[in-house]
Length: 366
View 1: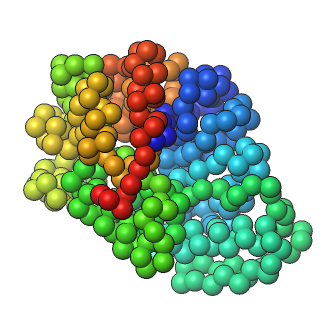
View 2 (view 1 turned 90 degrees about the horizontal axis):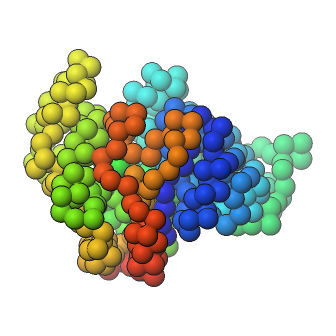
View 3 (view 1 turned 90 degrees about the vertical axis):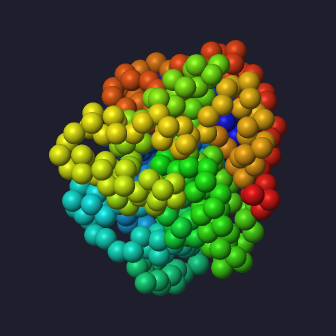
């Protein structure tokens, strides 16, 4: 199992020292968000100042960039990093695509499948010199001249991991992605009953095995040294749950737990800008039902018994880091400087790495 943590997310000035320190601490993968700043710029800086660690995004927003623009950036990053890029892609919801990015909207699951397949067609043409002949419902790639062809690289193509909330995007991940990064608003129930079966459905359609897909642990996490700290972690998730839960596109998760009325309440409060009242509307019991919750001592056993599908887990929200340029490694909705749980000690982090890294994933058995 790969152990991940976050980096970046704020101004880029402190990234160099930050990623050097994370690599030295033994993390397998470092992951940058894309909220207020450009994830691709941060990945480039991380590649420059590390040598071993995988460099990932969770997630880079796809549709405001064309597949060619994304493929070109990822190709450069893969060459520069010497083959260490795992590009996380997400669709974002319609409102942000149209009203924030000034873009267009189409059914996202099919569009994303065409998007990823065009990226792979671009990389194939650059690696082999073959003439491109990619035509899909959403994208066309049939023109490449020597002037615009960067040529091959001595590494495998970048990996692509896909974010999902609903079943159709899970099918897309199964059909064409290297990995699945479940959206932060996820529960174990939805992961096991909806997401993984639909990833398998997509994989079957594409003639792939489920074991070819790299699964990240999905859902909120509430860990601690003892039960008191676990409860503190659970309580600290209420704001993040209210933030995500106010978006109607994510209400399928609430629906699976019989909480759809809470989702509509949160949506109405968000329209009024009553963000603090939203957090108050999510009680402790709701947060506890939605979270992976256990002590650090019991986490390896919890992973073996409940998360056998996963080949990577993020401890980012628990890892103490310097505040590099306003970085925020907690859950969305948290206020600046607010933490939902006590940080891991270096001794505990080292112990967890020793215990978790040997664990293997078997999604087909889930």
